[in-house]
Length: 96
Image 1 (cartoon, one colour):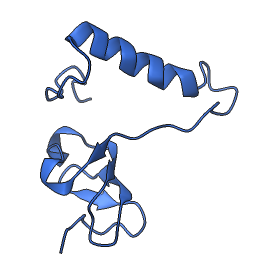
Image 2 (tube, one colour):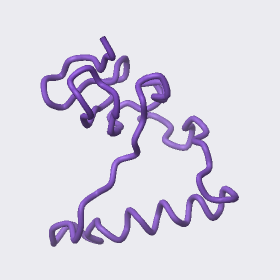
Image 3 (cartoon, one colour):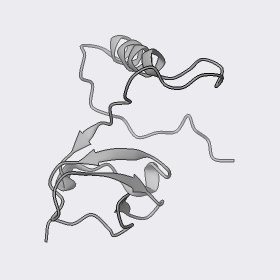
């Protein structure tokens, strides 16, 4: 199994690393059920990226993001471990 503690460093949106992690946890916990016995209570917000700013797909296998500047418009995308792919048709995200 992959070592999930070895993730790339994400830019901090809130002051320091502790506050950043706390706010991310609060956001995730506010919409995801605790034990899987109930549905989500609100939409899950994906992190937005322009294609040029996407993290390395190899570091985020099975990760999901919102791509703002794909050739066909903004779209959710997932990492297959090599590329970021649109969820709509599995094509690699592209600006051309």
